[in-house]
Length: 335
Image (cartoon, rainbow, N blue to C red; front, side, top):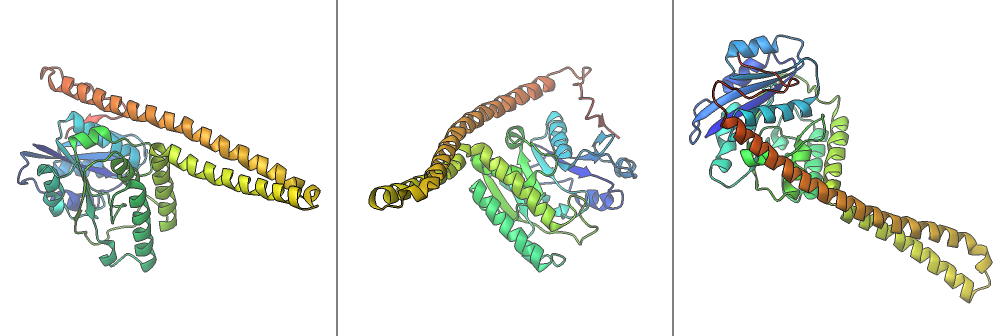
């Protein structure tokens, strides 16, 4: 059983040593623990520090591409390296690496495909009351979209089984947390939440300028991901609502036309009713098309997961003197 701990980094030369030191190399049920650093275009000495720390693998980008892209590149590299479990942690030493055994235990026991660390944000001292409330509200909303209870959706301290890593995709360069929760919930994955500890705050987040930006972007990503799976439901709801309002306005005109002498004064109601009826019907038709697209996407995702699994299996059977090629935009660098 091989565990790879991936650490996306952007200018983390000061905090990376503490992050790496916290990662245990001896975990019950795990035969091999390796560390993978993804350098997302750092301009400081992050790579040199990673080499000095003796990390097992480094993936480097010549310029910053975003956390989502770095996360996806880490997944690809970890799978090529034969990881059975992938743990993601942050390079700013936010999460306590000593909790990795607790994070992977549900996967080792066969109870989970995705394990999310719960920071118990209500007890984090440096979180303001507003941030705690927004964190709780956002997690509740995204959890409702996903159909699972995740008290800390924004937590990036997670463990993925190999099957989950092959199946989950990422369509944004901003962040993976909300998108993967909705995907996992809608795909009926086994998701487990475990309490984790955090370290004292080392620096401000570079992912977003303020909590409002994070809430807006994460919410938009979660809603878009949910719409991917429930497009017909969403368009049917709004189409039915619009069609119903148009019907009521139309009936109102009929009443005035048949039972009063004011029918000529409400011709505009007929125009508005017709617009709403057509719009509602159009929304329903759009929902059908979107549902067909979502079905095709599900088939494509399944096919992509199978193809990736076949590619990884083929690479594993290659002779040792024929190492698998590495894409040019994700150069693997062993220190």
